[in-house]
Each structure stands twice: as C-alpha cells, then as structure tokens.
Length: 471
Image (cartoon, rainbow, N blue to C red; front, side, top):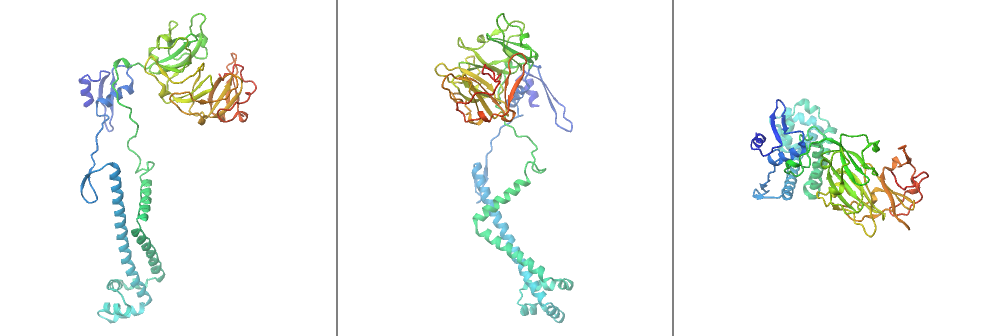
C-alpha cells in the first residue's frame, strides 16, 4: 500500500506498477517503467522512500539489579546481565547443595538401617511407637527415622549397601565442587563461560533451532537515482585503437579476430573486450592517472568512434596502458618503468570526473607500465627487466595502496622494468609464444627464480620472448 501510494504520488517515476500476488507465501511484484531501469537502482530508491528498509532507535531504559530505572548502553547492559547470570548460578548451586544435603541425610539413615536390618524390623514389629526408639538406639534424626518407617518392608530388604555408599560418595564429590564454586568468583566466571559455550552450540547457525530465518547482508547506502542515469543493460564489445579512438559495438563480437574490426588507415587494434552498457570502464594511462568512462557513453561502431581524449581530460602525449571493466571487487597490479609497484583495489581508483584520479606517483622520467587485473586465485608475482632478468616472489610481499609509488619489485643496474604479471604458482608461469599461432608456453619449475621481492633475478627460461613481455 505504501509503495502504491508512492507510485500514485509520482515520487518514483521509474516504477510503473506494483501487484500483490500473495497466496500461502508473500509475493510482491514490482514492474519498472521500461527495460532500461536497473533493478538494483530501483530497489535502492524504494529502500529510501518506503519502509522496505527502516531504521529505529533503541532506548534501553531498563531496571538494574537494584530495581532502579536507568538508561544503559549496550556495554553496561551486558555487564549487568553477566552479574545477574552469576547470581543465578550461585542461587542454583545453593539450591542444588541444599538438595544434596537433604539426600545425604536420608542416605545416612538408609545405610544404618541396612547395617542393622534385623534390629530395625524387630523394633518396628514390637513397638506401637517405633520412631523414638529408632532415633535413640541408632542416633537418627527425625527425617531419617521417618524415611525408614515410610519404606515398605520389601524396599528395606532390597537395600544395597554398595549402591547407597556409591550414591553417597558421588553426592559428596558433587557437594565439594558446589561449595568451591559458591566460594570462588573466579570459578563462577569459568563456569559461566562453559555454560555460554554450550548454549552457543545449542543455538549455532548450523542447528535446526539456531539457524537464521532471515538473511544478514550489508546494506548499501540508499540513494536517489536520477532518470538520466538509468541505462538499459545490453551487451557491447568495447574497441580502442592504437591511436586512442574508442567505440562500442552492439553485442559480444568474436575477439579472436581483432583485425576484422574497422579502423582508420594506419591505425589498428589495441584493446577489445566484452562489457555491458551498465558497466564502468577504467582506463589507466602512462602518466599514472586513471579515468572512468561509462560504457553507455561510448559512440557506436558504425564509424571509427571518437578519440578517447575528447571524453576525458587527458594530458597531451599520454598513452593508455590498460582499459578494462571496472569490477568494484577486483584488484590491480600496478608497476612503473622504474620497477616500483603495489596492489590497489579497483573500487579505490574509480574516478567520477573527467579529470580522473592520480593513482601512481611518478618521479623523473618514470611512466606507468603495468596495470594488470589480479585473479582471485593468484599468489605470486613475476617481474622481468629490460636486462632480461626474471624474478618470482609471493604476492603477499606487495602492499595494498590506494595511491603512491609502491615498493621495488626488482633491482636493476641498468634499464628498468619490462613487464610484470601475477599468476598461481602451482599452475606455472605462462607467456605467449608469439606469431599468429596464439599458443602459450608454461614453465612449472620456478625454483631458480623464486626470490624475495627486490632481488636482481636470473635469465628467464629458454624460449621466453625477446620482447620481454608475458603476453
């Protein structure tokens, strides 16, 4: 009803209708105005405008242990709760201790009766008031004598001394533990920890009684989605030429034949990959500046496209090093010609303005050379210098930074870095063999080249490309 009123009030023009199709299960159907509406964006707007997502304050005005009303914070509430649980533990232990004392008293009487069974039966048979005689002769308490008299004769005959003594010893041992627990605050805390741990096992999320009935997810900040930002999600093939002309072809074209794409005379293919019109593209340039371009903003593929420099504020003479889909959960390996680099989260380097964002601090004649996506299973880095020396070291030795120069990947006497990549060690290090074959070669035994980050390295395996590039 609330969302229907939002539609009636035209507060969310991207939503056309809402239908209640609930029967035994709740089912609400939201119908957007068109296919161009992104479902996540529409839901974010509804979370903000309706009670699909709601926030409420918690006023913990409670009674403390002295029954005094008081406003407490979570920490104080938990402390008071722990104090109360200790009190409950002590009272429960004292109650059990009283029960044990009462039972031990009776067991003492039963053992006396067992040891003197014939005399007990004789007293009961020959006296109208046997209770005082039992108490006097065997030094029994009133409860002990009463318990013996209330037993049936058959039960008296079945009394077993060993069973009685075993039960008595077990109760005495339990009694000793309870007395120590009541007398020791440290033991009480330890016992409470154990009890809470057992309670946690009982209500664990993998049990029937403890499993969640709802989901826990991190809510994205609700935001109003402008109509101009609504993009129809369609597959495209992004193409950039060597001279920096960029365009988007509808659909996902065959990337194995990049020469079939249309370029100006003297120009050729540089980047080509599949994307969606809703994607953001990240372009990393050799001056260390990163730019973000909406895939929906790219010109169509009927012509040659447009110079990417007309879409962002690139400095003259700047060359794109990498153009990829900006995966907010992804990471990049960054490295400069000086051989310094770091790992960065793509979400930290996405820029919303045409000016982009300066991510890599470069000094002197250094240029950004590598901006390579890091696969989720990658665990090692390989770097090769212009001197054809190769080093391999653990990815964990690379710092994660949002910007900066980074650390030294490899040490050089002359020249600088030629290329760097990331890979999974157990799968080996692969490189393109060159030519039109499209084949790659893999070296699995990298023991000779595995060193600490910043080493000089050794000559690469036989057959490594003379270009000094991994692809």
